[in-house]
Length: 508
Ligand code: HEM
Image (cartoon, rainbow, N blue to C red; front, side):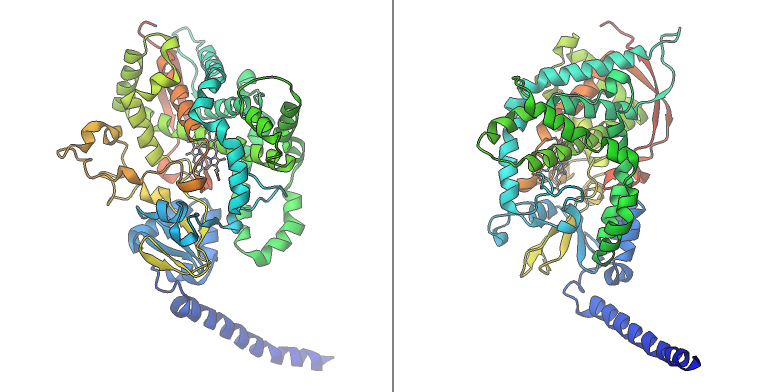
């Protein structure tokens, strides 16, 4: 009885010694022999995936890695096999088409991009170039400027309902509203407008002045989605989590509302109507069988999230900046009310030509970018030069817009909100912003996988912001959003922004 125990106890030092040897040689390999050993960065991050995963799952990765960039430079090793770039050339090198990759961009890193919930691929989760190109070609006509012109009445209708709902809040005798959090209203509008433009049904958020359970679910699940992504960095654990943990994380709400988009997609496909929504283009292209039904469903699920969360984040960002910079707020309201006399003057075409509005939006997209961390790509076999540095094939590489957009070497007074840096005067030699690297702001990505919804996003953001500022005066009651400290779980977790409204004071 005692003998096997003694045998086992005797085995422990051997086990400890062999583990120490394996660990020791892995550490020495990672630090001194690995093809990325010359890339600067903290040693702990170079030998283990744990520090990155911890920081990512805590929602502080963008701030933590920004600090690493300030210390180690624009190229930093963030995991044994991953490198972050905060370099002006990174957009072209990592996301652009490369001659070294046969004129194609690097493939998306499946650890980050492969769909977790759907067997079918979507425009965003498709890894292979051919599948992506086929899906993108089917959707592209729905997102041109021409299509947007036809979709404008749908957009205007959604935004008009937002304004009506906000005006209904003005119930006090002194002509003001009670204090309320304006952030959910950006979510309501973004999801409703996109639902209407995508498949002809809103989520009734503005109708009911409340979250549709599906929209609430999406907002709540942003954090848990990041947990899952963090776990994926450890393929050895993923099987256990997939089999034993994730099924239990799927709650009743998820089961009930998870199909909210698919149901709408299926309903829309049965309609025999002519309306210029995104689905009408897909139906037309699908007469030739361009996308499978599974791809259509997966793509509309992606579009709903990609098309709404990002827009709502940008609106939250610009509103936070304007309400905390009263001089910019006043100047923008002056431009909007001065140049747009009647409500009917607020058209998408007119808004393109308001210089201060567009300067404010560019500046908000710089500091409050909706995608502060871009999901990684894989350097092709054989390796490649990225931003002038040789990176081994198979390395996971990503851009950190959060750090590029705050780099004091690229921007004057980098962390402050200055819409002026986007006005023509900023190019003049005497301007403090004359050396700003405006060309490094790529809010919508770069290359063949650049945001397909860019025109729609600009239109929606300009229209929502302008119509609010044209109709209403806003007063900041309480700012609980400190944008610099916002947690980022791939997308940004946005805190409350408490405001009061009143009807605009001057003539209408
Ligand atoms: C301010 C709002 C938005 C921002 C900042 C934004 C940003 C981005 C970025 C940076 C990418 C590239 C991601 C990557 O490849 O790593 C992207 C891709 C994408 N965006 Fe947007 N986006 C916005 C609004 C929209 C809207 C309104 C839609 C609606 C359809 C949309 C749909 C997509 C899709 C489908 C992709 C993937 C494209 C592809 O892989 O071909 N986005 N977006």
